[in-house]
Image (tube, rainbow over the protein chains, first blue to last red):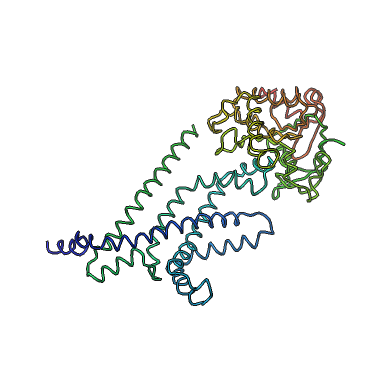
Length: 238
Length: 247
């Protein structure tokens, strides 16, 4: 009984939770800002890079190679290392405009770099899943390569990859907690500060709950989209 | 000079030589039907004519323009050449009317409003105006194929390439599609059509070409090809078609 009491006291103390809430919430707002800004940037950059990877012709070979190197690199390096490299490296350069940003901006850059690499692959899979006959139909009507992409290929591709995009978005939400390592005062750091001060881990639990309440609805929504699509495809198949 | 001229057109996919030096003339307003077994090269030939496939050899001229000189504006050229595919290939994420209106509006043929107006007129012509705001998967195969035909027509092409456009249709849906093709041909549309509908080819074609293993083995007026074929391979092919009840 004593142990249980201890656990409740150290991890689930209502009083401490109430006390920690303002700080933790203030930190979580930083995470929210990080995740939505990063996600917006990621969706744009990743699509651009996915398109570059699909460019035809020998002339585009260097661009394609560059895109491949980028995605390979940033899918391979752990986010925490990218955060260190960006967060401590860029200020160390002492370059005007680059080295004088806030930690928030460096955290944003690190998250965007890493997640763009993942999402590029998701988009690419989507683009490749559109049957070549769609491109042929678009081109045969006189649409240019770019127009065929914009009006025919990409809209279909994006629709197909919405569930995996949402999955990556959930990953991104959680990983915003990692950039505290370069001093972004987000939820984890707030919770840590609080815990150190009061020798109580309830603040961590409160922080965890914030994430859970954010990601679970999104996960359910993703499941719902997948189920809906399966139903539709089965109906069409008959 | 013929409207379409093919000279020694060859195409290979890897080690497989699909077209082995095909020469063909199509007069303006003419209708040429390509017949032959699956794999004989009919589809590839059509896809070469609007440069969906690159030639490995030979030359194609459409309306006096060489397709193969490398400087040709492929997009401008394709606007003059409509192609309809076996599998319809409508854009599934767009309504019927958007399918038809997209290319004319985006390629600068006309304004968006004009393109929609034109699309409505074309859909009225094929009796599918009430389906204008439906998505393609709500239409029958025959309806989808007719939409695909008017989508190509919306670009006001001077040449239509029809690639086995009834092969994927249920038999009872074929006649509506063929009726539309007949109207087009009677209206003077230059047409090259790969088909397994022999009686239709016989009725509509000015010239029938029998493709076998990447070459035009025999060509001539439909009566000659269907009634007095010269080549044993043509006779054999037609005998099998008759056996299957398709002629």
